[in-house]
Image (cartoon, rainbow, N blue to C red; front, side, top):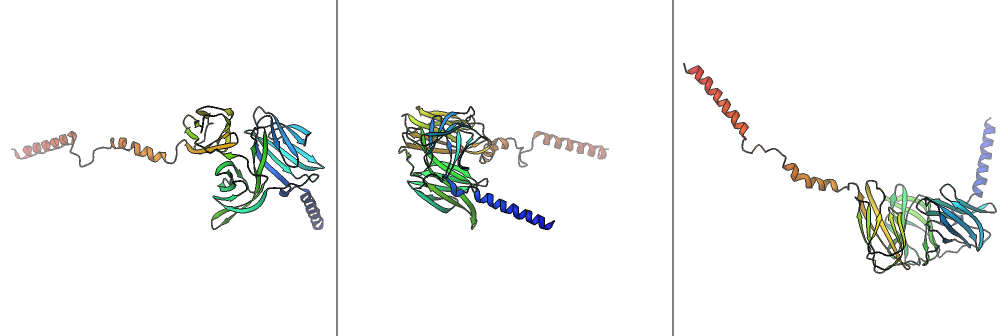
Length: 358
């Protein structure tokens, strides 16, 4: 029986080895990104593949997606949570497109061995401590902000302004793509993977690998005087743009989740409504795009009672509480105290006269 069981486990391990050997690895991934989408938008992939986003779903958690190889339509399908588009060639996955809420598609592209290999502008692996950054190509850098809820918070900056943020689990991928000047195409810029997180002298270290396809074409708007005012009680954010000219795009993010998006807009002050908030600290970030320049600003605020509010309320209410404090012992005796003394003295005189008056 023992020999039989040992033989069974040997066969099982061999089977697992065969499966592992044929499985896709991270090295097979040539592009990854979670992209905000709009109807009638083209997404340019690698190795001459591309996607066309048609009509969005009613819940804006998916869309009709067409996959092209060059000019040839390969397949078309509705993509939404739990129903991805998966394209295989000779039994190997080439592309996986998944839908998610907030008008996003998560795209993972694998190497097609039947096509030319992919070349990158820059590839590299490095270790970053919390708060540290690594320069990339084209005035771009990646920052490891902190560990949040067990994930690595990664940011990408162009010209000192944040253009991308994501909380990435260990072993997880992230990627950034940008729109063309016309807004009808998306092109990948950079993607990477958080390989591991270690600790050195009490400091968290993230091991990150990066592959950059090209330099970002987006530029920072020179006169970025964007003004934000948050009314957390009424759940409204007031946005005063840097100029009165028409914008190509204006987006409002709450805790890095898109809550408002407008195209070809023009106004002196914009009003965006914030969903109901849980108590605690939140961040509003607004991105305005004029031509192919970006102006971005963010502000943090507290919903509910902030940590400083209880002290302020105590200080404000203190005079009212003091006005209700009874008089101290040093205060002059009040009328009831005098009356008691008179009664006691009268009783003593009466008893003295009664005993010694005879």
